[in-house]
Length: 106
Image (tube, rainbow, N blue to C red):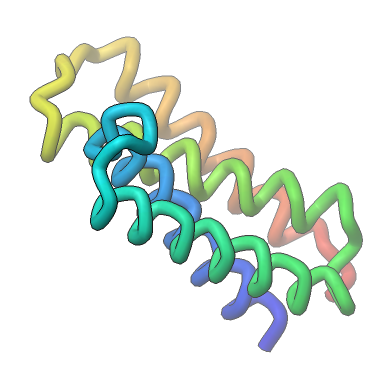
């Protein structure tokens, strides 16, 4: 179950990173509340997951999911460029996450 919590925490990391774009430096109320709420959920779920997942593994997977998710959101929502090298790097991040999961003893 810890891996499920970790995955959801990574999704919420993507949510807060993407929603921060709309806060305009935390000057807009609703986007700021969404961002802060998603941060709290993300870190809380990470904390629960780290009760059983080793810290190095958990943190790396959490940030990897957040980073990869944010790249995808940037492409889809913010019209960031889709370039072959960026896609290759995204695949490498995902491969690293999968590799860490499969080398975990949990």
